[in-house]
Amino acid sequence: MPETSPWFGKTVTVKELRYYNQSPVLFLDNVEDRNAAETLIKAILLVDADVEVLPEEPDAWYDHQLIGLKVIREGAQIGTVVRVDHLPAQDCLAVKTETDEVLLPFIKAFVPTVDISKGEVIITPPGGLFEEVIEE
Image (cartoon, one colour):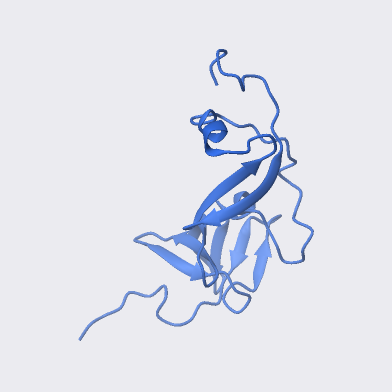
């Protein structure tokens, strides 16, 4: 924020986080309408949080803790998690392989192990998801 902004050097508190059309939307204390929100356009917000802390729920992770993890299938690295997509049906891991990007539903059956300390996720995807389809 430029020094002339009314928000320069101020602290804001997140009231709520919602997703609209797969995009995150923050609701902040003391920002009650669209006009007030527009004064924050292009703001750079610094988050005061310990990036190592996991969510309180079991088998839950923040997106930033999953991005960059190696994706291991049958003992071999086949890609890297590049983002987490929060889709209406379920969350998906976007996995960048050598040749493509594959969306893998982030469910226990396909991603049985997430090991943040090892920097990897072990996957057991359904057949055909990571293989090239050969048309006859």
